[in-house]
Image (cartoon, rainbow, N blue to C red; front, top):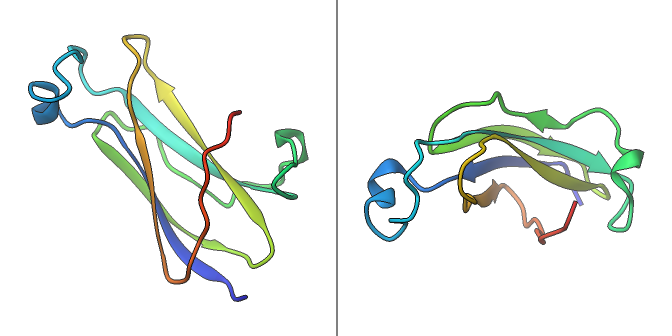
Length: 108
């Protein structure tokens, strides 16, 4: 395997969608961000975390993104962050990479 360039994004429904299919979302856009943390393996705990591979600033916009390099043989966890105290907010995490990358949902 080789080092992989990757763009990771976290997206929330835009304001125009909130008047349509997400019509129960009355709040303004939440301030969102995330951090990409390397972990020792798929069963590793977050206690084993080292220096962050990448992070975004918190922004009150529909999407936040960051580019990073993923090292072969390592596992990473994307930790979403939010300053939001309203209704439950649906978000989507997207990854575009130069080589195949396996993503799976994991509870924190």
